Image 1 (tube, helix red, strand yellow):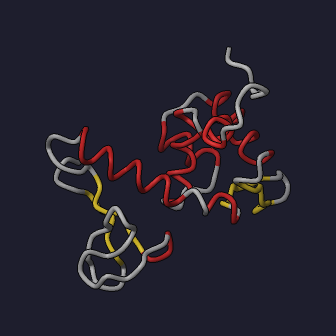
Image 2 (image 1 turned 180 degrees about the horizontal axis):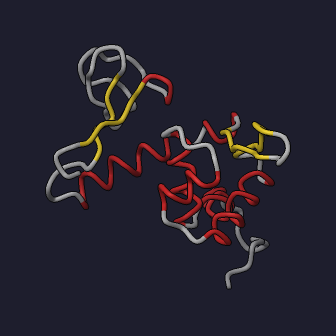
Amino acid sequence: MLPRTYESQNCSVARALEVVGDRWTLLIVRSAFQGVRRFDDFQDALGVARNVLTDRLTRLCAEGVLRRVRYQERPDRFEYRLTRKGVELWPAVMSLLLWGDRHYAPAGPPALITHRGCGGRLTARLTCDACGAALGPNDVEGRPGPGA
């Protein structure tokens, strides 16, 4: 296992990867951007083992990327919501998505990220290709693409 400290490096990429560099962690964050909030819904959407999901959600909460919010009492039930820190991951997640579309989607993008305002597509600059608006997570929606 790699150490979690970087005495010999002063590298923000390495430190950030300690939080979100795991496959399941980043897919949980992606799912949160898609509106998934509850444990069972994450588990259904991702097919991740429950113990792995528990571990990753706990870590994301401890790191301040997600927060647990009670939505039911007796029994207590919680959902997971992105924090400001979590929302700030949106450009990184979208950049990875677009990079994956370019290099690993031979049949075309599995999902199209479109501007809710006009239907234009998300660009690498996180703008709308139709109207030029700067886009954030609340400005877009996903729909099946040709590679779905």
